[in-house]
Image (cartoon, rainbow, N blue to C red):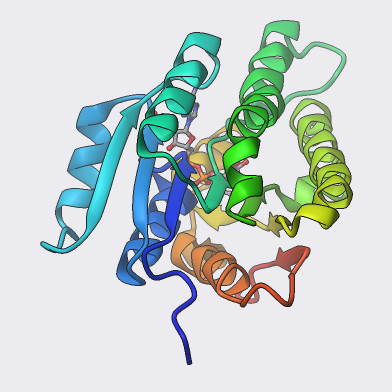
Length: 240
Ligand SMILES: NC(=O)c1ccc[n+]([C@@H]2O[C@H](COP(=O)([O-])OP(=O)(O)OC[C@H]3O[C@@H](n4cnc5c(N)ncnc54)[C@H](OP(=O)(O)O)[C@@H]3O)[C@@H](O)[C@H]2O)c1
């Protein structure tokens, strides 16, 4: 079978950790040229160094995606290269709490990183992605499909992210750009450790998806040739 990802140029946000890191590794293993975005260059380099093979083509972009100047920097880096085929939005944050007393600052932070940043990054890179008839992946959450107590803020950002993806997919049909939303359930990452702490639970990673399993579903979906498109993936733990 042809390796559709070989030599494609991909950019992954949230590449320093969890799902974004695993997607990065699997893209590199398939011969993609990669831009890894994270807040700390040191972390990005440290996390990938233990996997690094000589022929992997990696560029690092240090950017805080809550900051528009840093988003402009991401666009500048890509414009220097001149092309991009695949954009994976994996960066995200979560705060849990009842609407009655959860802080509005936490809502604003989640809005900026979970929704506004992927919107703006997509907007800045879209001319190049259109030219490449490329692909865009929004890492959403099962909390973007239904909500629970204490999830109003996070779920609101993920519901809205789903709307952005659904609308963009229709807008991009004439251009051949494919857009997929991925809805993982609980996944063993730093974010899930934080969630379990906020919920007052002991951490039991065996019950959760592995980040590499979610990444495999993502990479599989974007490995299809141009003639078909996976539009949504829901993946849940099938363990405890
Ligand atoms: N874990 C789960 O159970 C789960 C379930 C469903 C959906 N998700 C979604 O999956 C995605 C990845 O989460 P994860 O579980 O892999 O979490 P993670 O391991 O905590 O990774 C989060 C990533 O987001 C980046 N990030 C956070 N704030 C940023 C900012 N201001 N600027 C740039 N990067 C920033 C982090 O980069 P730094 O290293 O710079 O902090 C990190 O790479 C998120 O969108 C999350 O909502 C997770």
